[in-house]
Image (cartoon, rainbow, N blue to C red; front, side):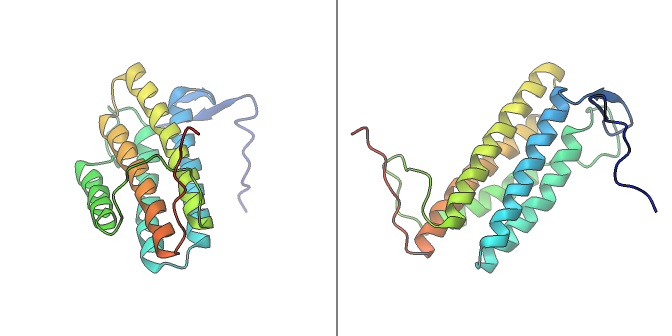
Length: 180
């Protein structure tokens, strides 16, 4: 039986796709680690939702986040690595458009919250924004990843719209923010 632990990371290093050893605080590791955390948070949402359409959408996105993780874990020169595509971004835009058509126009900032599923979607959205910032830092350092950034940007928009949609479906009023 193979053991889960290898002890190869005990001194703060890990392997990227292709076997190159890097520090665990390497920007590439940080970027795909943030995507992994986002994926786990979407798993929480899926465990809480009773909306079949939400579960199916998030399952598709979770599977795509593994592709994104592989993309971020490997330099652009590496062949045979799945990569995020423009079609993946377009799919997110279609999801956004279909959900947004059911929502009232947004005229105020909203306090994150509402139904438990919507609240977890807001949390996933903020994790997604962090993953996007990590991808931007990686892109600036290494010059690749434009589509990864675009995908994460669109995904955070989708998670916001989806949280609003869940609150609407559950009959939970959105709490508007005001300075006073």
